[in-house]
Image (cartoon, rainbow, N blue to C red; front, side, top):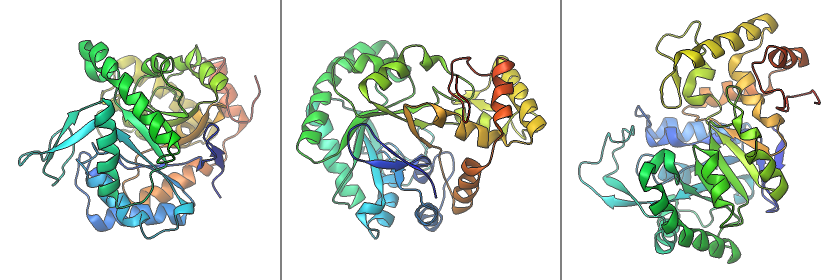
Length: 340
């Protein structure tokens, strides 16, 4: 069985392994409806209870596919999150944009306003065909997405935070947070809203632990849970670099030399202890008390099965200690089975 952890003070309990459903929006390559449904069904069968989607993923395709499966299941058996911050506008030529090979005829448009957030939640409920959404994240707010326009977008988002709080207070949703690729905007937003959790992609992994400095301690202080997306840092911690069949990717692009070398050094320790790199990448973040779950993208039933095996792989304590001794992980990073 997969362990379950509570999100903040919400009473929601999520499995330590979640299902990232960007892939069900045909991210980078199309998959059939049947393959998408089998992946979700296999996840439920193997005890995964947390599913994360967004309007942006395939311009509604991921939400539709997730909803079609979860609609047939007991609502107590799953926890669903989706996102707000983009509205979908009709567009005849929207396919194959933004990395999604989607047949859905829509174009995403940013809207972090109060009315935009309310509209987005209503639209998601319709696309999902479900009577509940458990968690709503404000999606991709921050300078990593908006650059120089971040101050303008963040000012608009202040009213969006109020909308999220109202939806939670009214019981429409149970938890609110941000779904982002940078922890800095989470710290900024904590001054404006009381969040339950953050879906943080790629910023606390086996490769990088800068978030230990101030962000994660603040989350512990305020009882804000972290759901860690992108545990493979865009793939390099899944494929490795020594036997990679293509250019390793890190942070949505080709990996720079220093990252490639660091992964190669981690791989050498994996070989020494006969540990799967992907297993280490999944298990490492969960040692931090603020991190309740990791949610890699899961695109098929086979991938679901292999990922469940990886997160359950037994990794010797000596492996983690060797990584620490070699300076390959932060000296203050909690690691499985070892106290500081």
